[in-house]
Image (cartoon, rainbow, N blue to C red; front, side):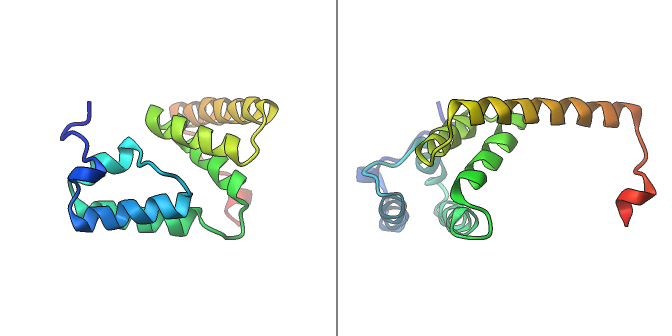
Length: 131
């Protein structure tokens, strides 16, 4: 259960409802997920986070599927089950196949393994990588 509980649409303040309405319109959905309902206890954080996500995950140099897969990789590495589930579902909707998922998991696993080895061995960065 969320630390402070969840704020449902019917119980939300007008300020929170405005953000909820924008989330539903932007995502073309009729529901608000628990992440947003938990953040709604702090309307300033709710709005700031939603505005940032819209900007970062919106159109840019990276295509939407790539952005979702990067979000998945970071969420998996940070062991955020909620974000992993949310962004895996979104990546699948944007076209991620099972083969793409398996390859992403291989890359995430390899990166985590080599990152741990570098940290443990305290390996200095090669000068060639700095230029």
